[in-house]
Amino acid sequence: MMVQLLRGCQHGLSGPTALLAVLLTAVLLGAGMPLPCHALGRGGAPVVTPSDLAAEVRRYDGQQVTLRGEVIGTVMRRGEYVWVNVGDGSTAVGVWAPARILEEIGPGGGYAREGDTVEVTGTFHAACPLHGGDPDLHAVAWQVVEKGRAREHRLPPWRWGIAAGLVGAGLVLTAAATGLARRG
Image (cartoon, rainbow, N blue to C red):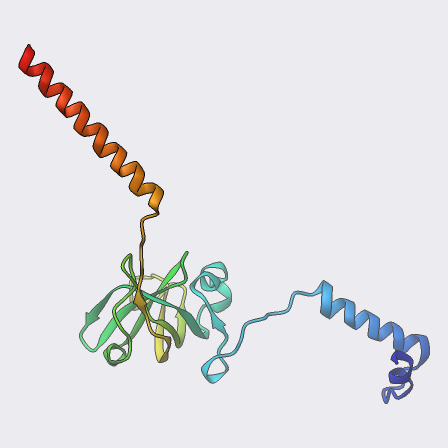
């Protein structure tokens, strides 16, 4: 099949030269050269996570990106704008957005709640001159990809057993200490 494809080559390559060109291209693109694999968000901006931004600060500085992650913590209102933290489990990025974003997003995630998963498109600043030199993203568009929900934290049964044993041991020790104090 490869020979049939090479025979129809319109670029003047044929035989072993064409085969070598195809193999060399396959090796360079398939194995030897790392290729960017970010999806594209609104306006053709690459979709990145907070960890991607932290790992490649210089690459994304001043670039339009679509940040995907969970809304975490408390949203802080500052006049007509808000600060929203978007995290991915290991890193978070502060997002400076118009206050109308609050109409769409739910409360931030924490121990008891998982926050909304959002995609926020805007310009990433490695050291924002408007906000004290900290890294941030100035949002121009956003969407909620998945609504947040309550987190369940169930205590495994073996921990209940340990807790009951410790309470029992504490009661026995208290009773023994009380008995010794009355005798003495």
